[in-house]
Every structure is written in structure tokens, then in C-alpha cells.
Length: 250
Picture 1 (spheres, rainbow, N blue to C red):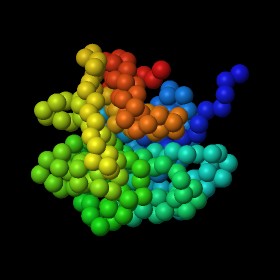
Picture 2: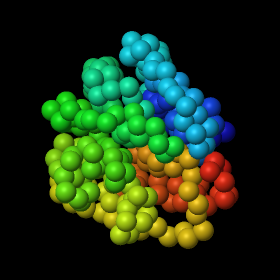
Picture 3: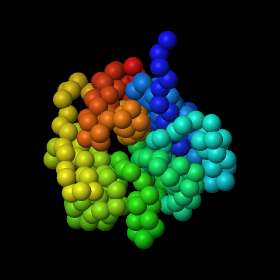
């Protein structure tokens, strides 16, 4: 009989194609040897390449889902995905920290769907700084980090945001070194992770997969640089699993 696995909670939107959001997170968490728990923050109307709309779950209902899960399971890591707004995210973060002060929160700041639907066009900087100070790590891509920090380059943006929390800058949208991820620690240290597999194809929800895999590895006790490397390796396997937009997990 196997030993009990760590528990990781995903708070994210529901995607009927299960390529992104909470359903994808659960599959990724299980594929990375942790038990995945899921709370729905939004109901989306989409498939792997079309986004038609979203219904937001009221923040009180999100917290109601979270409350029972945290009361029963020893969750040490939470991954947060699609949120209606920064104020809603701030409310949820405050609740998580109040209930479990030592909890590690990973925020994947989804500002725009891969199909082109924009969730958040503007970011209020003062509130953003308060939000970042409450999370362990954020996992933006290049367009997201530029929008969050509004600096001249993604490098400057990531460095600016790393004053408040750790940053894993995903490299899928980089123009110079596509697929090269960069970890910016609050201490000022930087690690880079280059892609190794070449036979990959674009996948719906790949950003969700990377951040969920990272959450799983942190829950297993890996140091952050090693957790990032392992998450990148898992995501590469996902991207190379087939030529379609929906990838396969282990």
C-alpha cells in the first residue's frame, strides 16, 4: 500500500474541454503524485480553441467551497487561477492566510484566454502589490508580466515584481529565446531553464499545467529551483504527448 500523498488545492475556472482550469489542474496534480482538490471560481463556455463567455462564481461561494476542504485536508499549497478581479483575489487570499497562515499560494495570473478573450485590461498597482505580498510565487507569461508591471521589458517587469514575491516567468511567448523560463527570487537570485524537447506542439492550457505541476512539486518538498525544473520537464512531456491542442497526462 502506498503512503498518503500531499494535498494541493486548485481554485480555478471550469473548462468543459478539461484542457485548462481546475479540471486540467486536477489531472496535472495527480500526474505529479499529489492528491488534487478543486474549487471552481468561474464557469467558462469554451473548447480548446474557442472562448464564448464566462459566469463568475460569487466570492462568498468560492470561500464556501474552500472552507470545507481546508477544514478536512492538510493542504499546504494552493494554486489560484482564473479570478474575476483583483479585489476578489485579495479577499480569497486574506481568507486562506487567516485560516492557514503558513500556506504557500501560487497565483497564475490569467489576464487573457488563449482564444483571445480578455478578462482584465487594467491592473491597479497598489492593490496588486498587496496581493503579491501575500503569495509565494506567481507564474506569468511575457504579455502578463508586462501588463502587471508596465515596465519596458519583461526582464525589468519580472525584477520589479520580484520585490514582493518569487516570479517564474514562462517563456512560451518570448521572442528571443522561446521556451526559456526564468525564476526570479525575492533575494535577487535568478535561474534560467532552457527547453530540451524539440518535438512539442502548442497546447490549450499549457500555462495551467506548468503552474499546477510546480505546486505539486513544492508540496512534495522540493526547493523552488528544483520544483521549477521538474514542472518544466512534466510540461514538456505534456506538450509532446500528441499533435492536437489537448494534451495527454501521464
